[in-house]
Structures are given as structure tokens and as C-alpha cells.
Amino acid sequence: MLTTLGAARRHADLLVRSGTVVTPEGSVEADIACVDGRIVSLDARGWSASEVVEADGLHVLPGVIDTQVHFREPGLEHKENLEAGTRGAVLGGVTAVFEMPNTRPTTLHRADLERKIAAASGRAWCDVAFYIGGSSVNAGELGHLETLPGCAGVKVFMGSSFGDLLADDDAVLRQILAHGRRRVAVHAEDEARLRERRPIVEASGDVRDHGRWRDVDSAINATRRMVGMAAETGRPLHILHVSTAEEMAFLASHRNRVTVEVLPHHLTLCAPECYERLGTLAQMNPPVRDARHREALWRALREGTVDVLGSDHAPHTLEEKSRPYPQSPSGMPGVQTLLPVMLDHVSRGRLSLRRLVELTSAAPARVFGMAGKGSIAVGYDADLTLVDLKATREITNRWIASVCGWTPYDGMRVTGWPLATIVRGHVVMHEDVVLGHPMGQPVRFGRA
Ligand code: DOR
Image: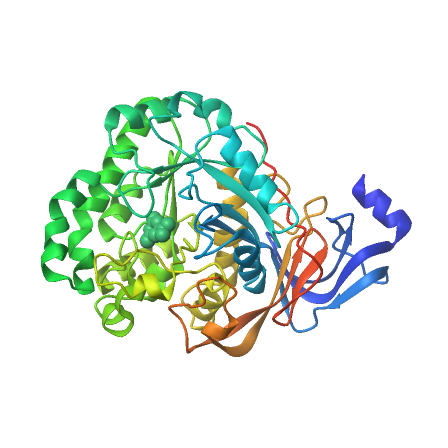
């Protein structure tokens, strides 16, 4: 119907002209016409339009979706807020984000979710969905909570990271898995082992021991436990920020039930060099590990064990980060640098542009059952990220919109840069400048 309507009018609200459009079929030269926030034609040569974006020499990607960000609102706005977080997102070419529940208060109940949706209205520059935290206090209600509009699903912290959300007990985890049907996103670090090993870093005070404290067994033990429980209950899982070779080998044999996320941080930074250069700025959970693990993540990505790239944007202020380790909080910002850093990997031949698009658009939409997103297709939301694969730029703290004001990649030169971000037909970023007003809406999900 949309096509017919568009063809009759041959006038678009927005025309993205002469770009190399990355579709599931491959890259094609095409003009994209958008009406009422949706794509109505990929064959729009000769159409008139109220607004035209010239994409000559640029690649037009489906809007980048980041399914793991911490925007800290409510309660921790000195680190980040929904306006600045989403502004960073669109400056980095991201058109939709899923926000995490370890805010203050934590997102556990309907009212918490609705408060976040209301806070994003008129302030979010891209579309947003919010996770509900899975915990002993709300386990029985999760089947209902996960179906609420704007809910990305359930997130479980098996190990303490930042904030008060924790579900480390098998009985509670089983209860969480038993209530609901959607894919459960999991931070898999084993709390008992983390407690047992904490004295290592209390004694050394050395951030280079971060990966010794939160070691491979902390990660693989938790991942094994959770995958085992999910098999018992028949629940699909999404294991967030997988950081070890051992987990990748294990997860490769559980692909029927489990989807896998990796982060640009774990693919780009490497221990011990990152801790020597960046100190506690490189401290995150699970930790950035050594070259053996980094190589295994790249191999898993190339071999198809990895589904999704997320940023785990987790800002803390420089003042907080400068506390003596291990009192320094874990987490690094990343929503704004996800695409530039990964495009640089593309330019170095480490993955193809097509695979990157799969990891940042099509797969997040498929894994989480998003409606109308993840592909450049007639009838889909007009979410588009225009990139110049040849542009070489420097990532700097000055460019970062986050309230925290820093990035671990300050001073890094990258090849490949987002030149424009379009959210449901609105051009919200062009050449590093944010345009218009924040018109982000809650992400819609299909129902199985
Ligand atoms: O390093 C981390 N920081 N990992 C997490 O899982 C949480 C995050 C945060 O919220 O700061």
C-alpha cells in the first residue's frame, strides 16, 4: 500500500539521493524516498521531495541499533542523561538504543518503566527501549512487564557490577526464566567467585589485576549455569559482552537457544597495554582481557558465533574514575564511538561492511523482535546512517556529547565516519552537527 501511495504522489518528505545503499541483497546505487517516517521506495529517481540529502560517494546503512547503553537517568545524571546520551548516539550514527535498568531507582516495576518513557519524550534524539531488571522482587510479574510498550525485555545481572541490581541465586534465576517468553539479556559473571577473589585486588590496588579478579572462570561458570537453566526452562537467552575464548567455544554449541553480543571495547583494546596507557579508564566488567581472548572474539565474529555488537555505554565521571582502584567504578562510554571504531576495523580488512551491518542492524532487530527496523526495506522505518568509508578523522574528548565528557579512544585516528543520521525520516545529525529537535519514540516490538 505504501508503495502505491508513494508512486502516485512521487513526492517524498525526504529523498536520500545517489548513495550506495546497503540492502540484504548487497550494495546498490539507489535513491530512497521516505514518507511519514517510512521508506516508500528504493527506486525514487526523478521524485521530488521537501528535503533532499545528497549521498553521492557515501554508503547508506540501515540505522545502527545499540542494544546495550546505560543512560543513568533517573538518579545518576551527573554521569549521563537521556538527552546527552541519545545526542551522543546520533552523533555516532546510532538511530535506536536499549537502555539498561541499573539506574536509581532500578527499573523493576511498571511505574519505573513508564517514568523512563515519559522522561525520554521530547528529550531523546533517537528511538529508545528500556530493559526491566530481573530480580527476586519482581520475578513473578516479569511475564507481564516484558510485554509493556517500550520494554526491550528483561536484563539480569548475575554478578555485581555497578548499582544494586543482582540475581545470583539459582532459585531466583529459575523463577525469572520461568516467567515470560522473550529473550533474557544476561550479564554473566559468577557472584560467588567474584566475592571470593576480591581480596586479590584489595591487596594489590592495581588495575592490571582487574582481569585476574574477574577471571575467565567467573565468566564461563556463570554463562554455563545460565545456559543450563535456560535449557531446563526452554527460555531463549542473550549473553551480553562475551569476553573470553572459553565462553565462545561453549556458546558455539548452544546457538539454538543463545544469542551472543560482543563489544567494540573487547575487540579493540587489549590487556595489559590498555591498563598501562589508560589506567582505570579501561576498567570495565567483564574486563578487557589479553590478546588470546581478543583473537578468539574476532574468530567467533568471523565464524558466525556472534550475533550482535553493542557498546555497553557505561559512563562515569573522570573524578569517579580517578579514585584508587578497586574503588574506581567499572565502565566506559561507547555509544558514540561504536560505529567509527568498527568502521575503522572495516577499513583495516578485519570484517566486511556487510557483516558490520548485520551485527548492528539486522541482527539486533531479529534477536529482539523489533518491528519495522533493522533493514532498508519498503515499509520499514526510515532509519538511516550515512557513512563516508574514506573519511579519516580523529576521535577526541571534545567531540563526545556524554555528560562524562571522555572516551577511551581520545586521540585515535579512524578511517570511516558517520556523516548523517536519519531517524524515521528526520535528519537529526549532519556533518557532526545535531539538527532539529529530539523526536525519539519508544521502539516497537512484534509479538510472537
Ligand atoms: O563495566 C560495567 N559498567 N559493566 C556493567 O555491566 C555495568 C556498567 C555500569 O553500569 O557502569
